[in-house]
Structures are given as structure tokens and as C-alpha cells.
Length: 152
Length: 286
Image (cartoon, rainbow over all chains, first blue to last red; front, side, top):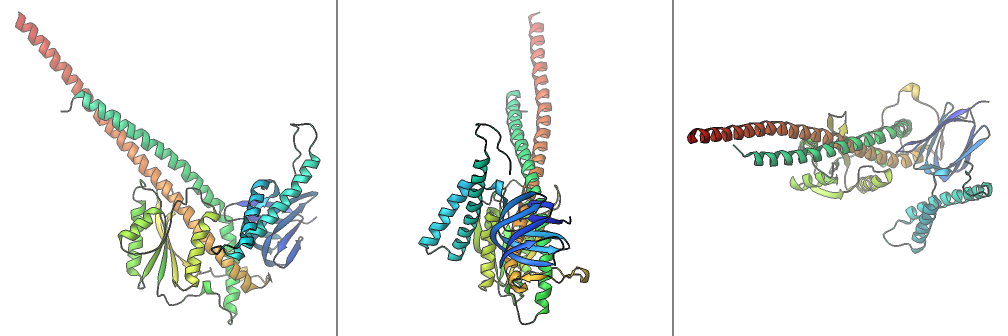
């Protein structure tokens, strides 16, 4: 089966670079599914989840906006920030969500509402994914304490 | 000639200094390596954003009824300089080399200049030379993230868009290699995208549309440029400090050698004169 190369980079590091079968990304106008041999495309991304499928494996990442370029079976994502779901710290994400929520509600004068809303949206995406992962993990954890947790 | 006691004290003191400079040298070396790694890690992003930008800019040039502010060169009434320097000294000639270049540039610019200083040394320089100081950013640290440097890029974008400045230059020390750091002055805004060679041109589908993507991309690009320059500056700082501290350690060790030689001479002299005294005493008793 045909595959394409997916590279996810941020200004700080390369987060992901592998041959994959399919990708679902949060485009600015809605979810975008990318399969091999897609036409050249350049799009803005909005904060959201990105699902990468290769074989039977599915990887979920959170991006907080950025750009995606599809060209000649190479997909490059220039992300503002990108995290694998295993990297998200639920407690921190929840704290950030609360903080952002507070800002959006109180609207202090020195805070830009657009930015506060963006922060809120980013935090929501992170928390949403981290919570779901938490459930999956606790359901899959064996009852024996200290037994290794299966990886995702 | 100083007494042996005096010499011993000086040797001990110089040896202590050498220990400190040696420690600083090793710290700088490890920080330099990390800073270099960060520069390399950011390279894929910068390469991609450059190529994307070239594509978009080609489209922007092709259409005549649109103009994107951050690409637009206008009459320069006021120049902004983002001056990136270390917070701390003991880095040899690094800061002096950069500020000398900046001073020359300021003299050559026709318009008035306002400086956004990143780092304490840059602030000191600006105040000392009596240039206008727009803002100071301090305490960026040795391992900044884009999050840390974003306020700087946001500020210069804001300055440009509000017509507070008509051009922004980026002044920093470029990391060439461990012993060479070159002062660099680049134009940050208006952004000058690289030209696209014909075989690279691709008809992309744009979402939502090219100009919107371009307008969203440019602030990211500027952010990345500032971040990158700061990483280079940090790598330069630590490599310059490493070399300076190595020289200091070597000089201290040379000094210790000289002093030890002197000490041995003084000690031998003392022994000789003591023996002469004893011999003299014995002679006198005969």
C-alpha cells in the first residue's frame, strides 16, 4: 500500500517524521483527511487533534495551530506547538484551562480577548485528549499494582 | 625580592582563580553545546517556512490589488534595531565587536534610530551612546523557548504596523564556529522572501486563500527569525566565554609556573645564606 512521509516540526524541534498511511488534521475550514497522492495543498491549521494512521497503529497528537503543506507525497506540518498525546501533562493542562477560562470570563482590561480565547481553545484540546487517554489507560491497566502499563 | 611566604600566598591565590576560570570554561562549553543543538533542531522549521514563504510571496507579487503590510518597503522615517547581547560579561571581545558594528550602522543610517535591547549589555550600550531605548528584555536565560521570545517579536511587529518604525534590523552575534563569532545585522521587517526558482513553483490549493495564509504566516516567520537569532547569540556568548575562560586559565597556569620558579629561587637563596651564616659562625668560633 502506498504511504507518504509525514514530518511535524515546530520552531524548537522535529516532533515526528515517519512514513504513514493516512492523516486527519484540523484544517482551518474543518477536518482534513490526507491520503497518499494528495494534490498539492497549503492550509492553515486550527488548534485541534491530529490522527496519524500507519498500519494498525494510530497516533494522536495535539497541535495548537500552524500550517500544513502537502507536496509530492510529503506532508510537512509547521506547528506552533505539537505534542504527542503521551507527552501531555493533564494537571498542567487543566490548570491552564482554568486560567484561560478565568481570563475569558473576567476580561481584565490589559488582556487581549482574542488571545485569551485562543489560549482557552488550546487548553480545551489538550485536556480533552489527555482525559480520554486517561480513561483508556485506566481501563487497560491490570489490577496488579506495579505491573507495567501497556504503552499507547 | 618578595619573601617565600608572600610568594606561596600569591601562588595559592592564582591557583584559586585558575580553578574558577576552569570551572566557568567547562560550564560555558556544555551550555554552548546545548545552544548549538537548539539551533540545529530549529533548522527544519526554518527551511520549510522559508520555502512556503517564497511560494506565497510569488503569488502576492503576481496579484496587484493586494498588499501585505509586513512585506511592504516604505520610506524610512524611523529605524528600529533589535540588539541581542548577553546579560553577562566575561565573554572576551564579543560584545565590543557587536556594538562597534552597530555603532557604525547607526552612523550610516539616515533616519533616527530606536533600539529594542535584548540583554543587559545592549541596554548599557544604548544608554551610553545616547541612542533612544524603546524597550529592554532581560533574563531570557540560556535555553529559551519560542514562548519566551514571542513578546519581543510581537512588540516589533506592533511597532511596525503602528508606523512607530518603518524598518526593523536584527543585530546579533552569529555563531560561525567555536572561535569565530561574527557580528550580523539583518533586515527583519519588511520581510524579504527569497526568490523562487521556476522549477520550484507549484500550484497549491490554498485554504482559506493565499493572502490570508501569508498574513498568518508572516508573524510566525518573524517570530522564528527572532528566536533563531537569539539562539545564535546564546551559542556565540557561550563559545566566546569558553575561549575567554580558557585563555584566563592558561594565563593563570603560566603565572603559577613563573611564581613557582621564583619561589624555588627564593627558597634556595634563603638556604644558601643560612648556610653561609652557620659556616661563618663556626669559623668565628675557631
